[in-house]
Length: 375
Image (cartoon, rainbow, N blue to C red; front, side, top):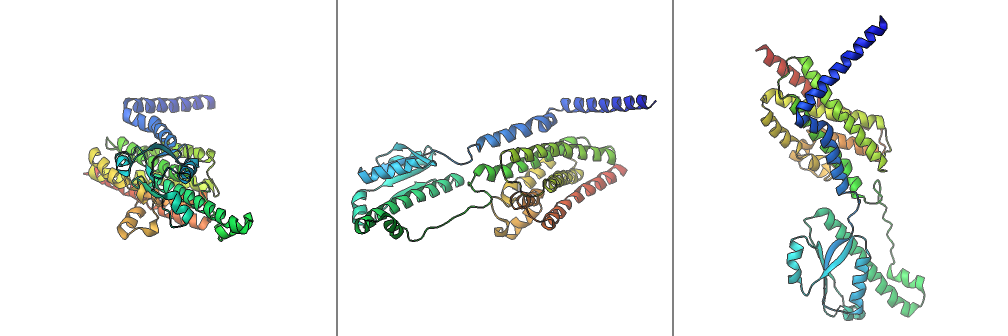
């Protein structure tokens, strides 16, 4: 008898799974959201930043000196992994169009009499124009050229000091009396992939989960139970993808100093929270198109307001309020606190409490749907 009951239970579960599969296969948008888009978008984001750091960025050269010293400048510039001189121009005007169209990202100008000014110590100047519209590229080029010019300066001073002192250590100490020890923390290699993947993937997950929830609410739920089933199903599907994301980031070698369990719990609250907001909005509007528009406006600033690309303590009051109203902001704070810093449980529970507030939107949505059914 017990075996018969078990077989019936298993057959019912299989029937429900087959019904669910038929339901999703008939709705191509939901099928894409649940099974295809998370993988495709994650792969695309990873492929863009797989090199971790910008390398061999094309820059132009205007060499008006044509000297041994200018050749050394060119050699040291090409020796950096970040940039590479790919084209030489006769003048700045000739390079202007390529710089504006991003065929080159920067232009190095070596002026007339550069070698003479260096030898006379009369203040030789190198001009370096870079396209600051590409923020990450611009910062990389700026830092790389600062390193090149610093190396050239140190080389010249050491050579001059060697003439008078004839002692390499003494010449080096005179040329560089202060040695700076700059130690980057939590992202030692200044890895752009680590910086951006840990932000872009959760933002993608939040947006896809919101779209999936809207898709399930296209037909109004007939009961609170039906609404809860849709809510839990959508949240759990994207929680699975969230777990895949955490495993993926760990396999890439990114830091994981704190509690993985707290991160998973925070991820669950993020997804249940944003889905709760969607339920609340749809319960009021009862129009999928309008809800998509509102959700798009609501989640679009996630990248800017999550507190990673721009610090929250530097935001003005409206931006800070919007940031606090996005569950992704609290999750990213939790992620940084646990993954990078290995923060305390007290701090983690405080952030988890902020995420739990978003669950109230689901309760409000359930109540509004129930009131509408009574009318």
